[in-house]
Image 1 (tube, rainbow, N blue to C red):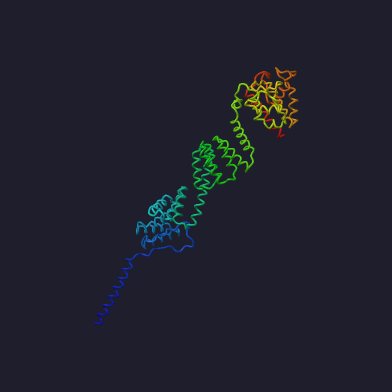
Image 2: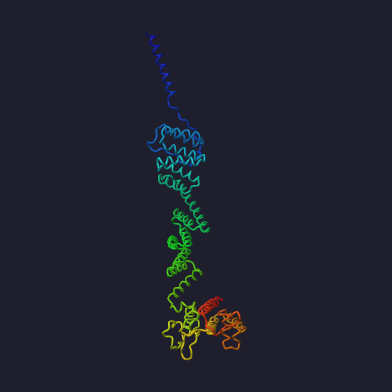
Length: 464
């Protein structure tokens, strides 16, 4: 009986050993992992941490092993483990991200995008997939799409601090590229393309005043003055101390026919930075505004076949007012036929200054037509006033004038002095045949040209 008991015990022990060996052969194999590495091969890759409740323990173990092999630099081992993880759980999208990063490490950007996109389809707010997708897009040259993916990742996981700086750098580089491309397009005359690129740059940097100013310049060239004004004003709002933007606003307003508003913008720019060019614009606009208030008799001078004494007086009074004031005349002149004429204020000014005469019978005869010799006499009187401020220049005129010769005005003619002085100063001119034609009626265009030349001489005399 004792012998039989010992045999039973041996049988039980053998069965136990066999059972243990069978269990060892049929149980799950241990997952192989690499030796710990001092530093990961791809430290910028974001580990696709499985969300809570997703995947079985075996799935997650394979996934983590794949990541360790990836960071150890063995991409084949990494792919085997990520693929095994997906076989265990086909909807385990973190392993898709792992395969995407492995493809990214091999610089196979199309395959990487395929895996990242699959993960994003499963979970549109999965930050590791969005970051990897952004990396693959950026490597493929799709900067804007990459930036969008990075921004989505940061929105999903604000703790990705390193990603924040990458986004800022990418925005800045993109801004530089857009601005450079926009300028090139504008230089080449591709204005719609340039406008689109500037708008992209503004979307990336909405607080940059120079972008709005440059866009406004392109829009003005493209004929869209309304849009140009809006963007130029936005630029000025962001940087009120930039005189260039105020000048641009003035130019746009001037092109729109808004003279008063343009003068205001130009004046604001002058307060920040003096400019002779801008001052000239303001003067021209004010002259134009003043001209618009003048009677039609004045506005029509330059196209009139003849010019009346009233028109000539008004022309001098409006354009040479500083010269008349420098003449110093203050004696009232009695005239019996100017009170009701439209040019009365200017007639008073030119007669007080001694530039135009009053006839002995105390009439001015405002409607009388001006002959060329009359215009020469008036020009000579104005040259005398201008010459007071520069005697040397005036002396040169007189000396050279005495040597002038005309076919129809001899040196003994009483009008020779005034005619020769007007011609020598280039206020008037003789014909190609040497004839001055003193008795011919002067045209409105000749009167305007003479007064314009006198304006130039008046300015030159004060500068010397």
